[in-house]
Image 1: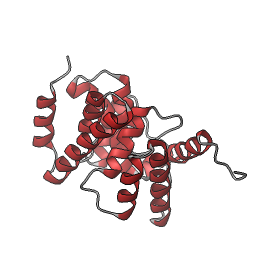
Image 2: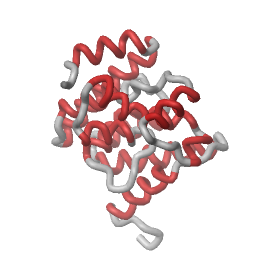
Image 3: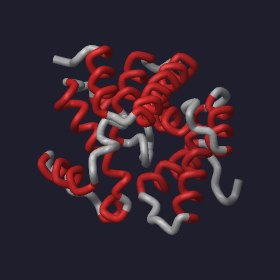
Length: 195
């Protein structure tokens, strides 16, 4: 049986740092607002935003161990960029700890860091909300925040571009799901080299 929003919020407040908890609440509220703007289920959006970082502060070794216990083997990029591990682990934990069984919500948690090909509206909303919640003050987040009110697909594309550029500038591997998500948005919008 799924826990109530109040029960989940209490757990997160007790188990996340103050800064991470503030970010979490910002993402939940932003996801809810974007869902209302774009006609998605605002309850699911809030819930996915609320639990999206439930595994964020678990140390890498423990994250890998827990993922393996769930039968999930990190891919070669996740192994080199352990900050990505909290998304799939968060989806498993959301189901186990909070009783969330809605696949749409769990997939929005699972892909909130990388995106993926043919993202659902809820996945796009949580992906963008994580990048644009009010605590995010950098220029790219402000730009994507503005775009998200006009076109959620363009916001996803702009975010993927920003994430890819940032990751390359830091000399880190770019997850293939992010590249595929970006290309999927380009193709969906009919943008190619020739257009």
